[in-house]
Structure formats: structure tokens, C-alpha cells
Image 1 (cartoon, rainbow, N blue to C red):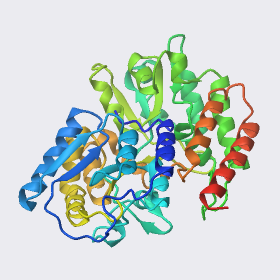
Image 2 (image 1 turned 180 degrees about the vertical axis):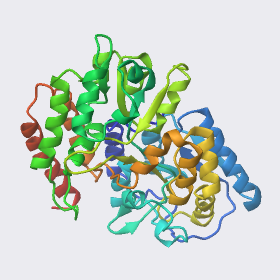
Image 3 (image 1 turned 60 degrees about the vertical axis):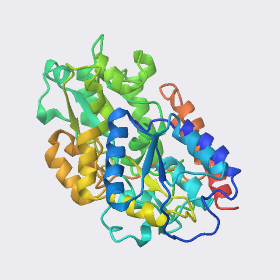
Image 4 (image 1 turned 90 degrees about the vertical axis):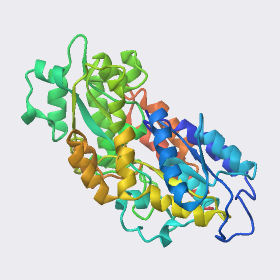
Length: 411
């Protein structure tokens, strides 16, 4: 399952990428056609995804007389960094939302997306996630948002009905309390910005100003969001996975130790380990600032000055078509990145429709170059939020994140 829950992986990318030079697959530039085989590096969620991507690449190759070799990385961050540092990056690769700004700021990516005919077909939030200095760089391959996943059996056992699905923080507190028993906690999610940050956004907060030039971590809105999480934790209706003998909240849901969790569409992967688990998906409850959720994505990255850009851009066009994205959805559950295909997906998989709806107002977590190490420290502070001081935690984040942003902006 590709949960996008780890910020630490980005640290290695920052360290490796920072020292790269002459990292493109060719310094002569241009998009001259080449008949050489193409290499693709992906971060696969499993055998189903690897096979689906290889099959799609083979179908494109059959009519373009160009072989495509797909490699599923054991550690995408590390292997991609090694490819660039060795001057031999793959011709096409998954570029994640949390590494994009680092690679784009170092000019290691070909900004091809802005020139493609289908550039307007993608969700605006996804286009924004892969835009650097007002230029759309690489086309998003799919996306995931966060939703509220509810254990149907425990919901019914607590006497709750569809009308009780929480729409705001107050009703979330109410149902979390009703669902909490001696063996089960009402709500669980990771002690990390990639989950808790949604509460800050729902309160009307953000870590960056709208123009992206100033850190706004210690605002009253963000404090309110963090205080709501603290309230849930101190009331005993929220626990983090480590307190539930689980590696992530999905596992806690599968084990029956959590009645509700905040996760994404990768939750469907639980069926293999917990075949009897029944759940429903709802949009995240709104806060005083309205609805908000995070969107996570990968784009199809092409190295700057690639000698095979003509072929890879053609391949990307094929891979991001509605028809092919819907085949990927059927094969391994991802949500298409184009609005038209996502609409079809929501109809085909109605249980996941809330994830699609969420992308209408979703935002990407902060991910500018250098932010990862600061967020990792923030995550460590969030683990103790039940006894921590939200204002003090965000004050430290404000200072450290602003310093990182100044560095990223060359100040």
C-alpha cells in the first residue's frame, strides 16, 4: 500500500539531490527522437501495479517501436537519487509530491507539462502540486485524498446510523466518544503533519501564505486545529497507531482496535489481511474554517534535457489518457488525475466517491525544498500532543520552517 505517510524518505532525496551536477540524461538538450529502449522507474504498491504499468508500456511500445523496461524500485527515493547522481537517471519515473520542489528547484526536471494539449484536464490541486515558479512541470499520474474510514460493524453496534456520520468537529467528538469502548478507540490516525495538518486547514489555517513567501504556522487558526487534536487525545477518544499495537491506523482498523481512521483509498489493501472487515468512507468533517483534506500524488517525471523526451512525452500522453487511467484504477485502485476520468471512477466505485469529492477542495501538504527535515521534527513533537502545548509546538515550527523557506528562496 502506498500510504504516502513517510516524510523521512524525502530527507535522503534532499541530501542526495543537493550535491548533484550534470544530472540529466544528456547535456546537449533538445527533444530529438531516439530509438533506444526506454527505462522507467516506479515506486510500486505491489505486483498488480507493476504488471499494470508494464502492460500499458508494452501496449504503447507495440505501436511506437520502442521497448520500455519498467523497474519497480525497492526504495524509489534512494534509487532515483543514485541514478541522477551517477548521471544516468531513468527516462521516465514517478516523482512524488514531497520531492518535486527539491528536484524542480535544482533544474533536474524537464518542464514538459505546460506544453501538452491535455494540460487543462487535470484537477487544479494536482496541477498546483507539480508547478514550480508558475510553470507546470510534470503530469500527475493519479491521486489520493484523505477520508474518514468507518468500521461498519462497530458503527452499527454503537447504535449509530447514516445520519450520524460526522459533518463537523462537534459531531466527530460525539461519535468518537460513542464508539470508544474498553477494547476499541473511536478514532485513530498517524501522529504526523500529513494527517493532523488537515485539522489545522479545517480551522482555516495553512503553513504558508497564499503567495508562498511567508510561513504562517503559528496563527490562531493553526493553534485551534492542533488544540482540537489535543482535545480528542486527552479525552481518550483518539489514539495513535503505536498505542494500538499497530504500524499504521489502517492496521488498527483491521484489528478492530479503532472504529474510525483517517486514511486514503489505499485502505482497500486491507481486504487481503482482513477479509471480514466492512467499512464505509466519508469526507472529513469540516472545521470552523470549512472543509479541507490533503491530496497526494506522483507525477510522471522526465529528466531535464532528456535525449528521449519525444518518446517519453508520447508515453506519458498514453499513460494519462482517461482510458488508461481507468485501467490502472481497476488494476490497483488509484484515482485518475483527470477530472473526467475521476468522475467515471466515482460512479464505478461509489464507496470511494468521497475521496474524489475531497479533491474539489483538497490542498497539498507543504513540500518546498528543505521543508522535509523541519516537518520530520514537527512530527516528533506531534507524538506528544496529548500533553504538549500547541502554541509552543507551532512557535518552534514557525521559526524553523521560515528559516528553511528563506534558504530555499536564496535569502
